[in-house]
Image 1 (tube, rainbow, N blue to C red):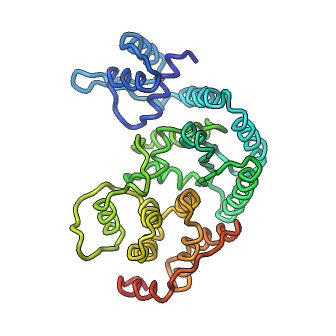
Image 2 (image 1 turned 90 degrees about the horizontal axis):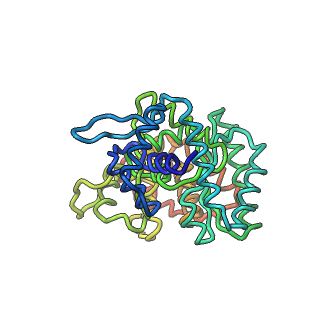
Image 3 (image 1 turned 180 degrees about the vertical axis):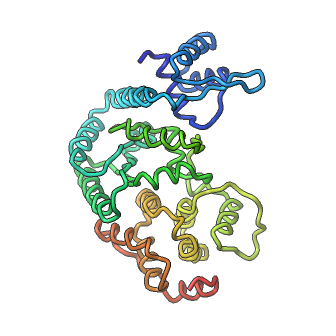
Length: 357
């Protein structure tokens, strides 16, 4: 793959679902790589169009560029692009190369792995961290749980061996695509903008291709949300969306943010009053919650013990409709997370007040 093609595909993949003219694409390439010329970009765009790698469609006076997912060969080009990203990232990073080699070796025989991606690789490497997404096929539920425990054990071992903090997200194909399709801001939509599919990149892009060909709109989020920076207005708005309303704050339209980020926001500030909201919104939205994503954020922001305490208390207090919390409890216990017990008496009163029990 030549450099011009790589830069175009790289930019289009980072901004998936966002219409771009040739001018806008040239500007984005310049922002990322420091230099880009409209004439060169325009020439390469028309060459890729002739090869059915991308499509051009008219919008007013502009030509809008999109990857042409109908062409099966596009997936191989995206896979090659990911390998080029990986090589550029690992240059001069001996410790990171060793970590990636061990992940490759150890995960080779782990069943059901469809792809593995590094999230925000450059930033995290500078902080001696790694954020890794494991994308699984969708076999039966028991098999997936066993695979999650195996991956978690491997990651804990690598973290000790390499003296690096590893935050890992494990999603089966259905959960992965569900978060990509969501209209809420969430870490999976954000990772599209800044990730490297380090293992089995074809599997990563084939899942996305299949969904796009079904007519699904998948839109990458350019900016990552930090829970601590979620505004008060957005917090109040989303708590109300999930079934927890407060007296006092004026409710106004805010940004749609996933429930897992909202819980992380509350945990981050350790607000005792707002902590009461967590079991209520979980109980009211258990089927809509990605517990795998919640566990990833709990690892990342160090509230695993607290969330384990809340989940175990919920399981004891609510007789039905909470079967989905059994697996995350088992996963946390398998990793020997020390439970921080929730205030069961206060939780029971709040759940009754919000007509949950």
